[in-house]
Each structure stands twice: as structure tokens, then as C-alpha cells.
Length: 100
Image (cartoon, rainbow, N blue to C red; front, top):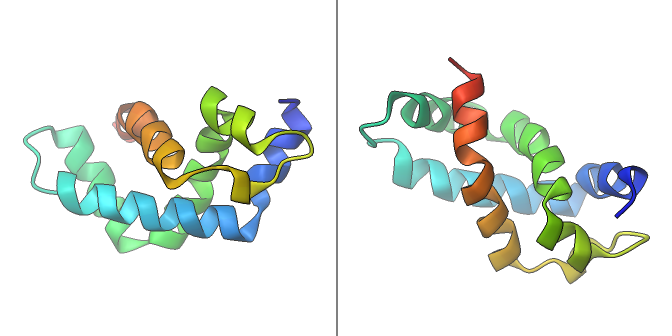
């Protein structure tokens, strides 16, 4: 997927809303985690899920499986919830480490 397509997908309101729902779900399961970085990210997500949905949407849109499914031009409806959740799982520690 071209970079402009990744950006376009990351700005799609429905896609961002799906990311927001997925990260809130992930945050609720990692909030009590013994990993301080993950717990810090979980707390930040739960305090402002809309902000974090927007931030993490860029990373999810660049995930290879998500980008391939979305196509060019990107269609967010082509991306499954499972693909979104897998991308978030793959990216979560990177975002958590960035908060250190």
C-alpha cells in the first residue's frame, strides 16, 4: 500500500473508531499487567481513548495485513476486526515503550 493510502486509511473516521474500540478492550485487559510500560499505556488509553485511537490508527494502517486487506484506494470495511486486533497486539509494546 502506498504511503498516501496508509495515511488516508488512518484518517477514516470509521477506521479510527474501530481502532479506539479495540485499544480500549486491550487496555482493560492489560491495565493490571505487571509490565509498567504496558500499564502506563493502558491508563493513558483509558483516560483519553479518542486521542489514543487517533494516534494508534497510524500504526495499525501501516500493518502489512491491514494495508493489504484495505487495498488501494483503501476501504476500511475490507479490514477485519481480527486483523485490527492482531496489528494492535503487534504494536502495543512499541507504543508502551514510547511512553517511558
